[in-house]
Image (cartoon, rainbow, N blue to C red; front, top):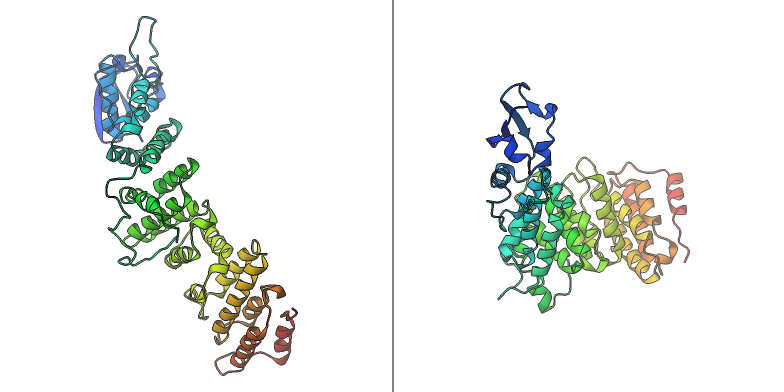
Length: 417
């Protein structure tokens, strides 16, 4: 096999290297098979194509310099440690395949790991840069433990108040087109602990989800993580395209679903619902959002529930969505106090939707019968909504019902106390 390697790294750069200089430090190079090389076996120059190389051509150049330097000649710094560590793993440089008892040359993996040990003491901006680097280093950033070290450094520094810090103001709730609220109780300490929000809003949705989940796994405050997610959406959602909006919302919803219920308000969840309505979310994320709202339905207001019906339907309001909220609530809302609050809310909602001539009788019945009788101490409001609905059914705008259908509708509603 020829000794000269022409290495194409992601189409970014081509390196002409001596295979014999690389092989003692890289098992990947040492064990190259004919199938991995381009060119005739007898050719003095063979071509190796590396796709998806962690850190790109810049990281590969450091790998090559390390090998040509006999296991040295490379300075691993905060700016390149994450990429070098992943590149070394990719090139299988955990040890020197040709090492002897007399050899003292360290492996590149060990050199990079040594640099990463100091990460908790890096300046904040270097830790943020490391987080950004990790976005393009998965899955190696995870399997090598690099991402875990980055998250540990993040959490350690987040706990240190920055001088003169305060809640980020570059995109205040009042100036934003999308207003969210997680309504967490904000002590002066928690306000100081939000100084890092602005530095991390530039992350991709996938990285935001990874970072947030990793912080939670390490014991980060759920309320602070919730506030960051709302801040992230507020800063990024307005100028995003449809696909990016969906990715941001799905990342936020996925993490919020893991938070303590008290960390996010019903108002905040409806804020997400409002901007998510025209966006095509994954079915699983839609169900997560509906379930979270349903569990907090006793904190909702009538205005929250008056969601416009999807385009292409004749009804004024999205009654099907409210029924899904009710189903989710009833799976968790058997406390009498919470049940009665939802009963009062549904009476208000029934009064609001009853005048809609496009509301189908079956849907009205589903709304009226969705809650058990114990949800109402008095049925006067329900009677009034039924009366209004029956009048609308006989109006010229309605397709109408037969007397038998009217009677059947009434008998399906449980008025017992």
